[in-house]
Structures are given as structure tokens and as C-alpha cells.
Amino acid sequence: MKNEKVLNVLEKILTSFKSGEIAEALSIAVLPRLDIPCSKWSLSNRLILFFSGTSDARGFRQWKEVNRYPKKGSKALYILSPTHRKKVDEKTEEEKFILTGFLPVPVFPYEQTEGQPIERPELEPKQLPILHDVAAKWGISVSYESFQGESYGYFSPGRKEIVLATHDEQVFFHELAHAAHEKVKGALKGKQDWKQEVTAELCSAVLAHLYGRRINDGHAYQYIHHYAEKAQKDVYRACLSVVADVGKCLELITTAAQEDQPEEISTVQPQALGAMP
Image (cartoon, rainbow, N blue to C red; front, side, top):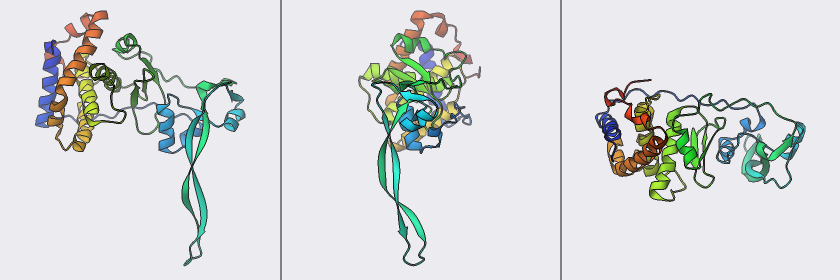
């Protein structure tokens, strides 16, 4: 890694992870759920929306109730609706319903409908996150959706987009790191691979320190610990096993940032990197 300041911050974070001297995790503020039908769906169905890049989808009749209709040629998403049947308990003669399976139900995203406008809260932050220009330079769009109950955000390589359910910049850094990792390694694995997640979260922690943003090393430690357990490693060893890729990702991001704003990294003093903004 060429940038000594980046390397110093990385070593500082690794040392703190090894020693266990980690601050208590700060909570991540998420964007509110909208008061719409899909807010009452199951978590798995809400995640289908989230990963489809929308926060509102409804059936044809539900859109008709608010005077909106699917556009010509629009494609439906499919959620799963549980099916039940009634069964009588032979001993108690009590009736109960048991789950028998699921049926696919077509719903249409808001973006593929037209008609009466619907008031929607502004979810984008007043100020876009630092390094947003790096994503734009790489042809990656950044958008915001309401929180769906699990994921704070995701990066979609196929659609070239980052979708966030929070204004927390460290989450944005995490998803930007995934985009950088794709450039370093080529196509990433589709599922949440532990090495990919540890790489992205460690990159995110370093970037937060470098740019003097809201620092949440406690959350980073907990996040990495979760994936390290899957690999039967402790946090420090999990980080060491991906440190080469982390270095490449950080160099790619900081170099792209310096091409437009060369003062960003050079003005950061290493001894002050651990301070809260």
C-alpha cells in the first residue's frame, strides 16, 4: 500500500481489534418505514423489495385504490403468500390453521406505475456522503430506501447501484468497498461471503477514520466478529487474512478521490484520526 497514512490507520485499527480495546458500538439510525401495505409484509418479502431497488410495491387492485396503474410493459415482482388449511385437533376438537405452503403473488414497484401522485418523504440526505463522487466516477448510482428490517444497504454489481437504508456514512463506505473489491478481484460471490464482508467492513472503518467521519469501530468489530465466527477465526486473524485485499481496495478508493480532491487525504493528521468529528 503506497499511502503511509492509510497504512497507519489500518494498523491502528488492527491493533485495537487484537487488544480488544474497542469502544461500545453506536446505534445506526435507519430511514423510517413508509406507512404503506408492504410495511406489514413478512421480513423475507420486504427484503425482496429492498434488493429489487424499491420501497413500495403493490398488487394491481391495491394500486387501483390509490388511482395508480402499472405502466404498459412493466414487469411484476413476485412475493410469497402463505397458504393454510383448517385442521381439527382430534383430542380437543379445537380448530386451528396450519401452514401448507406458499403461493407466488405478483406485485408492481411504484417506479413502474403511473397515475395519481403519492406524497413520499424525502429520504436522501441534505448532503451526499463524502466519496459519493468516487461511486459516480465508477458509474455506480447511490439511492436511499426505507429500512426493511435487516439490511442497512447493499451493492448490486449487475445494476451498478448502491442502495442505502440509512444516512450513516460508514454504511456507505462499506458498500463502496464492495464495489472496489469487485474491481480488485473481479466478480464477487453472490451470497454474503465472510471474506468479502470482513474486507468491506474493515475498509469502511479505515475510511471513516481517514475522513474524520462518524466513527463506529464498535459496530465494525461486532460485524466482523459475526463473520469471523463462521470462518472459525477471531476478529484479528480474520482481518489479517484479508488485509492484502483491504489495502488494494483502500488504495483504489483513495486514489480515485485524490484525482478530484487531492487535499482530502493529505490534510488529515494521523494522530487525530481516532477523534470523533
